[in-house]
Length: 107
Image (tube, rainbow, N blue to C red):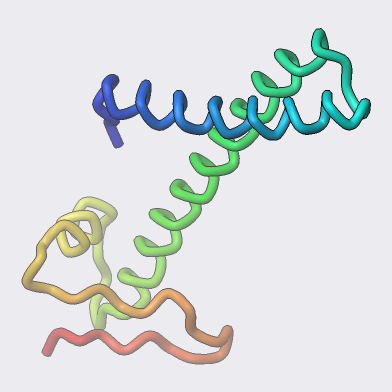
């Protein structure tokens, strides 16, 4: 997934602003020193971005797995990706129980 640099800059700026607000409150209470807040904000921004990316990658892989599993025939990875990208084909539900077989909405 390619993110527009302007959107990425905007979102990280908002995240940084809120984290600095929180860090300011922690400095006011004496939990951190002003010098520690910059390191705190940079570390938290990096951690949040890493966690969000990890969740996105896990979601995409799970969607591929369940889509392939819902098919009645063997699909290549490219076919699974084409099926997911096709808006006319609904994707299977990702929150199934472990013993439930996903049912393909395609006949």
